[in-house]
Amino acid sequence: AQTVTQSQPEMSVQEAETVTLSCTYDTSENNYYLFWYKQPPSRQMILVIRQEAYKQQNATENRFSVNFQKAAKSFSLKISDSQLGDTAMYFCALRGSTLGRLYFGRGTQLTVWP
Amino acid sequence: KAGVTQTPRYLIKTRGQQVTLSCSPISGHRSVSWYQQTPGQGLQFLFEYFSETQRNKGNFPGRFSGRQFSNSRSEMNVSTLELGDSALYLCASSPGQGKETQYFGPGTRLLVL
Image 1 (tube, chains in turn orange, brown):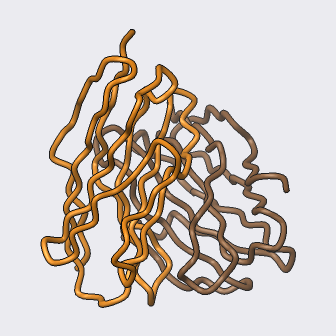
Image 2 (tube, rainbow over the protein chains, first blue to last red):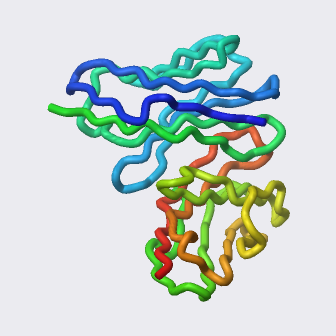
């Protein structure tokens, strides 16, 4: 079975500050992929960043970076220089190598305030 | 490239009716997945299609069905609608064989009265 857990239902951060969202997962596969998606009020699901489990180097996309700890099955998202437009629901997701479906966490609602 | 498109964007139906939702993937993508999103259950996987074949199916009753056409466009159908089917239905596409990133459409909001 594959599961994804996000233990922070809500978080808030002041503009320009840094915030870290937590995610833990469980999988029996050796090769898998981890993702962070954001869903703003428009409800459009937008890819933020992805990480291949076989790569030790943490993925980075501009202000977004991850801390991938494979042994601990932890995959946290760090947002630097937070902007008002970062306000959204953030979902952590896991995808195995054999089947294409995504397993999602319950999400973390991030609010960035001025 | 144009993104994933879904039609209609909003839909209101009554209990007992049926509904068909459509999804057009990104050009060149051959895999389409469907998800249901509700406040209570979160994001739940419905099914995945690749080259007109259903590859994977989630734990939903038989009232939920889907298909994929030769141009990779996909439809999902829900028969005998129930109040609990009210949800945001999201479609995602990817190039093909399992490893790639899924890109989502804007969703169809279904309200069952």
